[in-house]
Image (cartoon, rainbow, N blue to C red):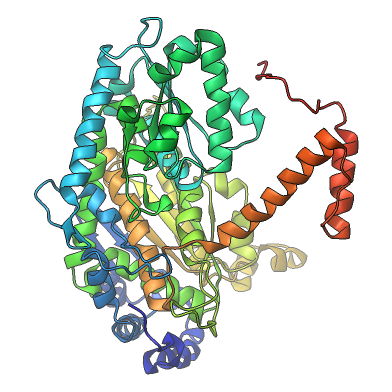
Length: 568
């Protein structure tokens, strides 16, 4: 996949740079009067509707972006990903999260081997194990059924599964499947997170899933040891084998920890952490909560987008067009951020998950060949469900900085409410805002309009909205497990498209490592200072001062740590 050509040196990139001046002469309130243009910017697939007519773009812009995709060899890069080539060149790995949700009869190669049978072997094991736990044939150390699950992981081992869990919690089918059960996620090494997660739980009825590929992740393993102590102090050390299972590839460390290696569920080095929700990382805890049949629908939804992304021509390919429009906004119009605005409370954890998928993937400063980029790559992602966000940060996106927005709506609510005498249903009220906000951003409000409304002259500058603020709208038919899988895959592939165009490696994350290695030095210093009263040394003035203040103010922490669990 490596190429010595920087994309900004190509003619299509230069053409788009020149095209910016043409676009700056337009305004969305004028572009939206062109019905033919707007019609060309609607796209439908499997009852998902994409409307990107409120982008600061013309059909000519789209053609130029498609030329850019051609110059970046986008089709070839997608093919290489799907064929299992080691496109993650810095780690010499394939990138095959699409194999995690492929049909049983699919053939997807990695290093000359079809990995799909391995995937389904793990999925079948998850189905068998989760059904045993759910039907009570696998019980805890005291013979009680395990109805509560705590999944321990961080980053991709947490954010993706939490997003799916939160989205399913209010789906009627999922509710029925999860009746009497609860799933919690422990990620932060902060002991407060431990306290919150074990509050109200009984070790006798709790199963802990430890998710760590290497079984060495510092935060995850400390949390795992903490919950191991919670279980063993209540039920005895032998109970760990009944109450803890693992998602890992390091069977040796799993066994040393006290978990039966037969209860370790595998995944592979061609699965990046932030792309791992469709592996045992997410499928195991989610299947324990909702049953495998519900989660299989989620995998099918993701697979439907995988096939669409791989086979559909770019001009009618949802992830490709979304990726190209992001490139246009970031690299040409100069808008570095993106707001993800789902008009469904069930999607409240979508933005935090996409923050990681996007910013860990594309937050890079060099090309895949290690050449410094002459442009900035990556997007700053944030978001909040509507209408909550409207009463939070929409002020900024309406009258402050220009931030392209993704509006995500759902036709049928998971939990419809109707009140007699109301003008509309609760969901209609929500969706009224979903339809109104993109137009408010696009059209704005002029001083002339305000004058005609007899607004006081001194208030006109404050009530003027410039408009011309780009957005796009995705409308989903519903929000069941299948649709949730589709939404996940749309964003995953969109982010890959951006990285492929920019010419970076979206599948490594070396930036995560530096802070972790420095934390190791601090950890050693804290231990030495507390146990041997060694002075703080080897750090700069600032860190030394802060560490000394921290140590002085926490002298009550004993040097020889006794076991003490949260007291909530």
